[in-house]
Image (cartoon, rainbow, N blue to C red; front, side, top):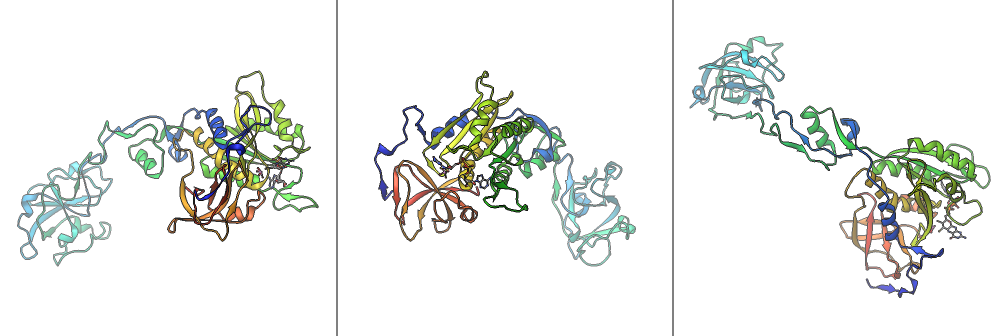
Length: 452
Ligand SMILES: Nc1nc2c(c(=O)[nH]1)N[C@H]1C(S)=C(S)[C@@H](COP(=O)(O)OP(=O)(O)OC[C@H]3O[C@@H](n4cnc5c(N)ncnc54)[C@H](O)[C@@H]3O)O[C@H]1N2
Ligand code: MOO
């Protein structure tokens, strides 16, 4: 990197004391190391979308279940239409209709010199060896080539009488063979598959109404701060609107969670503790924002100190400083009888969002049992009118826009962790490493894509 690199004197303090500063990677390892995927449950197909399958699903019946037509046309015997042409059509007796869903195909038996009208998806009747599309015939009209089949309801006579076939066809032409998609006993989907729309469709096609999956985590998001007012309400002096709970609830949902937004809780440890205890019942993961710094009203630390069950291994919430900007103060641990994981994020809006992207999103995805828990990162050339500066010893995450065609990344707004508007116009985070204090335009940098 053609940028200013600072010596290791600025590296995080790893001494283990109260002033210890953890690196982003150490914190992420600790957080993810404490997360187990949620226990599998049986979910109805519409609810299983986006979830990870935990069973191998075996095909109970072949697809298609029976030989069927891929065209609207006539089911015929091959020998009857050998050598047929427009000038010398094969004239066949129409013995009836076979429509999709028609269960009585066995009653229609196509004998020599006979044809049955057949619709796309309808079972091939006994005796028939091929299907000729209606466009290869006169459609029973006695005239030239047909373009469509006339509706059985308005033209019942078309199911009887004669049809002229203008072209020969090979055996099995326009026939979709039973089992040509999957066979009974095949593995339809293997454990570990993420259920997207086509996978849900396959499960439905083989008749499965529900499957065993890891569920979406239920994530409760609450912001803290006595200055916070809900959008729509009147702002008094010194108050601001609560945006974090909206941002992070939306982010949790986008990450795959079932997200519950709890409005802002005031800076009162008892109230916060009571709210957290109330919310535990519906939470697989709790997220708080604010109150984790060193201020006199930073109550999250105080409240969480006694919500935790200290007698149980794995309980309790640790607060630490990370070598990153934004997002320096962070809390992580588990609380309540079920050791529900909790991440306490800093209150500054950009800090809480960047912290969510780096730590909470991977947790949500790990709870879902997904293998790939991280955002896509790419390398891009810095496009800027002047060099970027970054604090020594901290990994900085600047908001940016990424141009995939040009292979460039451009910072949006400054580095301040209160810059909500710039964040809303960014699609990526530009990463400046801990040992770099300046980055020249044109330098290749790492970029975290917030959309993939
Ligand atoms: N003396 C020090 N002060 C601060 C330090 C420090 O090390 N020493 N760290 C700074 C850093 S870095 C951060 S980040 C913040 C974290 O503070 P808290 O987590 O305690 O957050 P608050 O004080 O509650 O709020 C900070 C800021 O963000 C606004 N905020 C909070 N919640 C919301 C919300 N839901 N929606 C919109 N805006 C919100 C709040 O009004 C404050 O302006 O501490 C620094 N201070
Ligand atoms: O770490 Mo704070 O998140 O820099 O603003």
